Length: 224
Figure 1: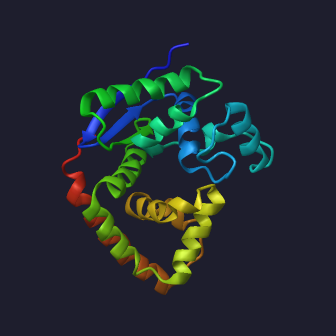
Figure 2 (figure 1 turned 90 degrees about the vertical axis):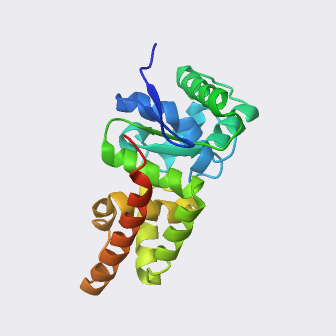
């Protein structure tokens, strides 16, 4: 079984693994992504098999393991991959071998420096969303500006956005990061899930504009 993938450096420390088959994409990243930020405490940061992950995920999803249908983009710190493999994998498979191969290639290129890995198909909106996460982690000024902009969200709106993301299946630890990525790139996807007043919509419009301007300062140096 051979999985077709490409690896490209988009920006200092930011790498994109592109896999066009959505099932292969999801299964390549699911173990390391869930190790990084699973909403399930028995999975996040723990040693687990894919069977255990599938069972846990299904129990929290009406009995269905629909991971390849639920998620179309992935992002994580490179150090997470090392932590996962250092802990050990009992049911190592072809998808794990791809992640390990990618990690080794990047480390051979840049050494032990921090890096961020994204996984997506050719959907540019998905890739841009994941780039927001990468910039939030790697670029201190980007994060500082984003956090300053998001402080202008009212508690009511912030909680609506937060609950919407929790309902989708995101971990509480990444809510701020997810809010900034959604509002910057694909705000309609998130806003259609919540009810807001005209006043709230007006306030959000300015916040979204400011987030987009901040992103554009960095994205002009990124070639997709």
